[in-house]
Length: 236
Image 1 (spheres, rainbow, N blue to C red):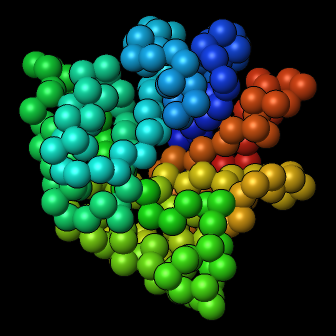
Image 2 (image 1 turned 30 degrees about the vertical axis):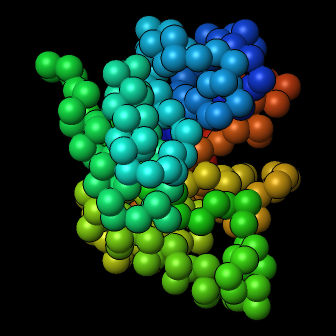
């Protein structure tokens, strides 16, 4: 069993507390996530500041638009130095392939290409949230997620974002080299918050996830460094 990388979600309203926490986590965790709220406040300079601190940066903006717009957005994220980006797999083949083309066109000489992951079904959603299938079941969610993962692989994406409940079946369907990132990670006794499809770090690791995203259980902890170490230990 491989040990997945821990990604701490810097879900703050502005840069100051995000950078403060990052300074405390430096050398403890390898990755940090910048989402919409923080990015809209801190702007495109933030990824470079975090990378200067030694982190790899997951820019989680979940692009979904016409192919030309997504291609340009991914190119911008690549120029910012993001190590991993997200788009919505529901955007379809043309959008996903345009995202891959945008990344390739924007690469600087010697730059490592950022991973592009397709978001499948948000971990805050359950079967009842599928608007086109209100009577759906957990199996329907799983089948949709696997279908989107297979499609993402065919559409030149590097992997997908999926809940821990789908990691095992997507790993079987898409192979060992396809990257799986899992939000909604909680220790067994932790509050799920607004997440619906949660999973423990140990289970996600056993099933084959490559990256585990943890936000509030670390960022809102009395001792974030201690909490991060607990999650790291739980994946080993």
